[in-house]
Length: 359
Image (cartoon, rainbow, N blue to C red):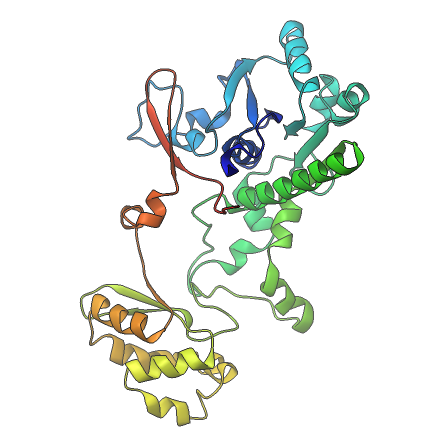
């Protein structure tokens, strides 16, 4: 079964906040034994205290901490204490995979760096998450710092407004995916050659690797992307939003000529197909404001449910703007929820880190 794929694999997690713990939870979901070692002197992972005002102030955990800490064994140790350090070393040396976001200087000082551990266990896979590409750069780097430094904030938000951060720590999540992929390759290498590995990634490199088309737009044309809200710089109408007659918001994501033809048919705007200003995607991007005014006039006459029904039956990509209550009323979202009862009896919930199936 998929959820037992890594049964027998031992993973030790010396990582806090989101990226490293998300990697540990990935392996826990697939059946690995994951031991999370937290800093006893600070009361554990810092995210235990990242609570919203409506959370139980007496609890030792937060909803944020719960989101990436399912299915693990938790051990609080003070790595500056010799006895606790010896215990951590013993656990790490028995592992198949060690996940670390230690500062390199601290890891070396306590003997939990890759070089020290792999002298004793050459089959070990040591996965290191850094802030920046230079591992010796120990500057603190929270997700929003990387969103700013890697250019995302300059592109996010409305054109007339300030930069907007993503509402989840998505650079952390991107880095988690990079590190997971690296560990999986290292496990394959160990299976084939019997060798361990040291794999590293950084928040910065993970963010840069995800600039995708925006990076190419700049690298190939010199165009510096500007804030456009939800609009797409290369496609129209894509990411454009419209107000329906009932006050609800509709988003369009029309990416092909066929879809644009279907959109025009539903809205009784077939004349646009003969208009040189809208006949190609390039023309529609250039004349986006004029196009949106014409679309808005038609869309504003219909309710959201009515127009979504028409779009769905005609194959026009469109969406409602859902809040999380509406999201988790969908069967697909409900199937992604993982429950776990904590030692104090508290029932916790989070979404899976795994969104694939394997047969």
